[in-house]
Amino acid sequence: MAHLNTIEDSTGDLIDLEYFCSDYCAKFSDNYNGWYGAMEIYQPENCQTCNTGLTYVHQGHLKYPLFEEANS
Ligand SMILES: [Zn+2]
Image (cartoon, rainbow, N blue to C red; front, side):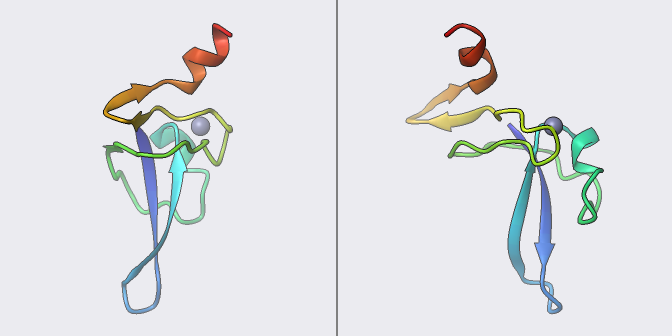
């Protein structure tokens, strides 16, 4: 799961996303625009504030980079 900041252009179109491990980390960004919820993501991403590997869905299964690193 990831916490997202949405980045919009001047017309309100979504142009980019920032990924975070938590709402706490998302608030460090100048683009923070309120709680966006915990969203499923489908590719590996790291938190832009603390660099934690984020849980994501891979071939229908959740992947936990942090957990796997701790056990490898
Ligand atoms: Zn973080």
